[in-house]
Length: 127
Image 1 (cartoon, one colour):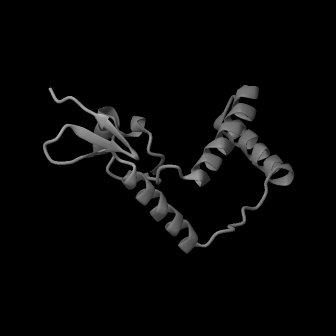
Image 2 (cartoon, one colour):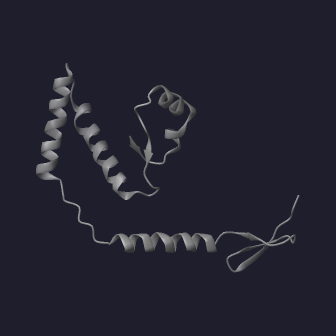
Image 3 (cartoon, rainbow, N blue to C red):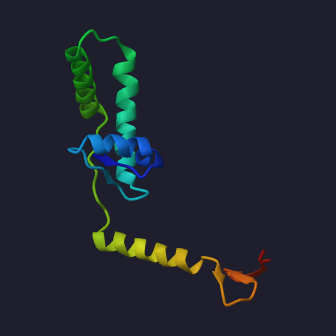
């Protein structure tokens, strides 16, 4: 099962359920996985437009409504996704972002009580 990194997917209740369901394995997408946001948005549209607008007396009726939504979406709204960056470009961007974060982290040096945050020096009192 592919999930985003929401903490709700990692609770004790979820872990307990997973132990009882050994055929399920959770795979978490990277933080800020924009493709997953698009998938979640699509399912939100499906949920708002197909099941909530009608009453279904059987699973077959619900499946038919979902199928109608998918067909209408594909005919009128679907747009193919075109990658416009190379994997190397994306990996390089992630690497640069990590370095930027590392460089901006507060640093504590030795036993003195000053922390350097970017170009500023902040006096920190130790308890």
